[in-house]
Image 1 (tube, helix red, strand yellow):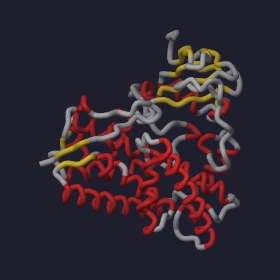
Image 2 (cartoon, rainbow, N blue to C red):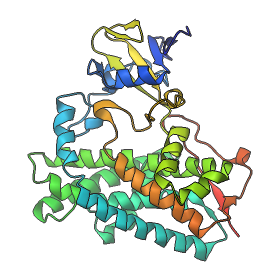
Image 3 (cartoon, rainbow, N blue to C red):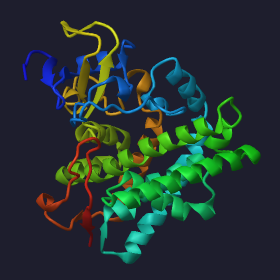
Length: 353
């Protein structure tokens, strides 16, 4: 790999001679330039050799894999559902959900797996609140979304959980259209979107809002335990500490874009058709500006404020309840995910006095 500046030549697993952006300014430049496409079917995969096979174009509603103007249409409709009032109501529920799970940990303690006891259920139940999943359905639905976005290794079981999840969301959209309530899916049924589009947008929110937040909780806890002074600052500067954690863990280490035209980045010419891998992890090491853990440009995470609320509420509450929280095993024994699309820990045993 040729090294020069913030943009470097990189040979991809399939042999494509693409690029790797490592500097913050180069990463932001690519993410904010509409001459770069987010569509997976137009790019080379920087992680694995796909044998020349590329995914199909994004299905209706899966706007995260779309460029403008399709992306703009969907995102504008969804942004209108993230109202200040709804976020405030969700924050109140997040505090209740967090307290309930801390109560359960205390009853069942003094040990727990932070993933299953805390890090997974809080964002999962928050997503249920956002979408308007009825209380009586939440148990099975939560199990399926955790299975789909978590660490399940049984492929057949994973596909079954995914099919149940997709079928349930499809049915829920029909129900919300017939009897709308004060939730995101109901709000979307008032637009010109089809049921398929609303269901796919909801599934996109599930995928983007659960696994990432779960693993920021897990890897962020390690950061806090390594630097106890940050735990003290959680009480007085929770917003600042959360931003430090988001930068430090870079939960999505890398993403990619494909050039639709010739573009000059960092003084180098990226040709149309070339893919640029973007190292979020390296870009976040530049402390001269804000982090890019939520991305940048038109595809910046639409749920970032909700994720911040979950972390701002969850981390201080965890240490307020268990001030002597510690790892129950050596850090070197923790089982990390074998892939790097979303950095994560499979189990995180903790203990407290």
